[in-house]
Length: 471
Ligand code: NAD
Image (cartoon, rainbow, N blue to C red; front, side, top):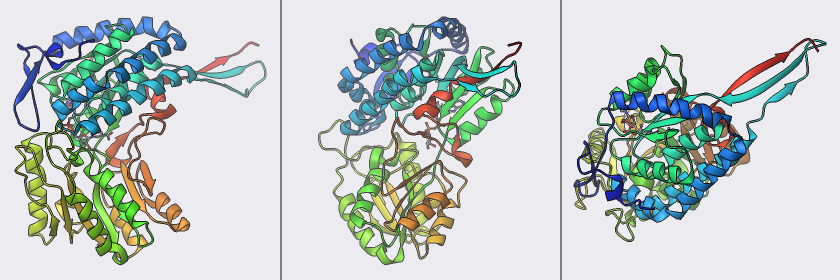
């Protein structure tokens, strides 16, 4: 099957897509108007009625084929991801594997949408629950994981027996269109799953929230847009999943294995040039190991190879665009003027338009913008602390609550800190926690709902209580 960019694109298309490494246009995608998408939703809804009647086993067989095709086309998909998001090829291959894992997982999990029989409350009556598809769904996804953010929503929706219409991010429509093509090739009915690029996200966002056939919206993106959608979905009382921004603390205690902590910080902070919602956004280091940790981290950071994602050996790609780079530069400059010290980097890179050097700052304090805003760039702001209570207090002092990380060996501390951190996901002694088998999601202003695991399937199911009397 042809997944080359030229075959997915449309020279006349209204949506221009750019290579973040050079800023040059790589292709154009066809866009869909409000009227087009309204009709697509109506068709999806009809296809969903038929799909819901199929057995979970039949749906699983089709999803398994989609998984196999996705794996088979890893290289072409990875090239698309790198071309439109800029990430290094090795990371793009990793993303395709991660994205595919959701299809595999939910193909199986869909067969286990069990209900319950409940011990009755009265003679002659029986109590049961069943789970049924929520109905036609809409999804809006970001550019930072153009494959995985699609499969994490579409696979559970289809497995549960729902139709789904997806609006991909403007920067990355081609990965989404390739996944749609593979799904259709696998046997997913064409009307059941559609990808609808646009140049006017607010227009389609409003349509998704107000169209009478849509029963659920799943959104991954910024907290600001998530709040807008939450308001817009209230009129139709839509089921809503929101995966929003984060401000992850990464805490290194005096008793940590420092080499492991540095390894974890590299993975958590610099993957995708720091453009992940679960990225370490603040590195909190205890007095006793502060200098040693910073020194070790500096050695590793200075070994990163900055360059275009498609170049062999690149480990740090560009930011998504020059606006992303300018935001990072602004936050670093503000921190430096407020007294932070540059350990390495702290400047734009001459590698090209969207590049910013891998950076470490020390002397950062919680009142600096860099410690409260999502950086979305390759910058590690190091905050020094003295006590465990102080670390937990600083870590929780944010409206966000997505992911948190800490390194410690004292088993009592591991439990205390794990329980004390107000986050939807906490990793002790590890820098990467995303997996299809565990519930991914945040609390506070990082959102609601979970993706992945059996909980991710429940987001697309309604729980119905069934009472049978007269027995
Ligand atoms: P964004 O909110 O600007 O865009 C996300 C999506 O929303 C895009 O598809 C965009 O077109 C769409 N959108 C923009 N305005 C809209 C509107 N008014 N109505 C409807 N849709 C609209 O975010 P971004 O810059 O693309 O992505 C980065 C953000 O996403 C970060 O905050 C990051 O933390 C977050 N993110 C969260 C997760 C998670 O799982 N929690 C994962 C990845 C990214």
